[in-house]
Length: 319
Length: 319
Image 1 (cartoon, one colour):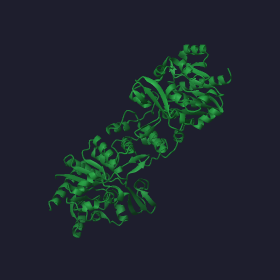
Image 2 (cartoon, each protein chain N blue to C red):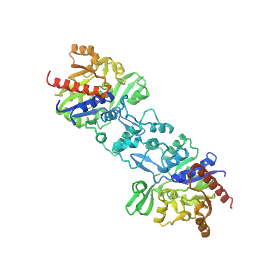
Image 3 (cartoon, each protein chain N blue to C red):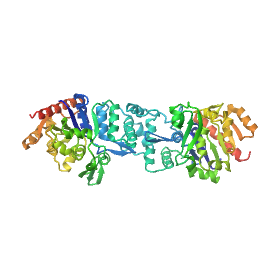
């Protein structure tokens, strides 16, 4: 596949697919727009969970068995923080802290998040271009039976227990999609767009909520392919499946494809979800592809990346 | 000795004496006013070198062989910081970082430095009351042959090499001595005042430069005792001796006593500096005491503390 691929992504699942895409695409041909609606400030430090997971995965520094932080990180900071009575509900590794501290210092000088991110990525030897979805602040708010929560309050503090009634992406309507990824999406100069296997409601929808993004995807002259974050009715990580049910999106991989209806040309499901693919086909939904999508190893991530790109090329060829 | 003792102090030497004083005085009878004129911001974090050295020494967490930081601290943060291309000239341990991050978050909410410090000390189980000399900012500036430098630029970056022409304590004239230590100094309710063995020019003079402090020491009804930071003409740590020469203060322990002329009633010199004590006596200087003042162990710190307190009691008794 020639030309630049744009991936829209959240954290761990998307980051693993993007690591695969970065490995199989020529250098400089991968643009990644990352959800920042879960970003928050903690102990005065700006925490960007999805951007960091993306950076660490693409730098080969992510822990194999965990969806966040750096491999082999230390806990001296947390030990000392507890000794000093600091808020310790959010785990910060010693090495991970350097990212937050440097980013905080840069943002405080007025540098946009995209510029800081670019510099950090360059330092880590990442050749793909990782961009925050926007340099403007967007904050996901979960309206729940226990009141309105931020993502971290819902995810970490409340362990996803409260019933969610509605979602809101505060600030999205005033946030500009970053032009480095949005301009090529709009002007049709990409070769494909990939909606990564991230939580559709918490990771991808905030990106889609930015002004003009849905319209640009609808009108995209190049194929838009989504990869299901749901396998056999379950989310690989996090609360995607529960949220989908609570918000009436439905269950199973096919419900994700329906959620993206009108935006995508192709949908990749897990090999075990043939029945879901048949349902989509019977409904006249997007073309579907069955593949191994549980990226337990980087090798599976590369295989999936190749399958997604081949699928997009096939869709582009009008097959 | 009954009643509260006030110590004016800088970093390591002063902190070791204060740890000794805290150990030999009844709980709650030690007030420590700490120099903050070397405080600076690094990577957006507020660094208070002398306050931290004081806290860590009094909490028993200071490394035995080094004048800063925490014992057995890790270097994960610095490793990651270098990987990200961050400024790495100032060493920050993983555990030490928790202090700076928590303090930064607290100051950002508008909390005064003294209140943050009190909370951190309470968490660390410190019973002595450690106070910043002032909650208002004071910044030592060294006018040198290579231009005007902050303390950290002079001390760390330039390794104390430039010839110093003059010192300035920017902001001192507008900074209020913290009332928790200054009020008892002024109203004479203390039992003794100790000028710790810290750099007279960089650590003690900034405290003396605060409005009213020299006057209050001059009029103090209780004995004021200084402990020499100079042994056999050399500073135990740092640039005190070189600075004294460059700024025309003179050499040797007696020069320190002369520098404090009119402010102190007693002066403690190292046992090896008998000749300096004789000079002071011949000049009609303050009463002097010879003692072991190189605090290589906490035990020597406690012995020196006892000697200083006994000396002060003797001076108070009009001996």
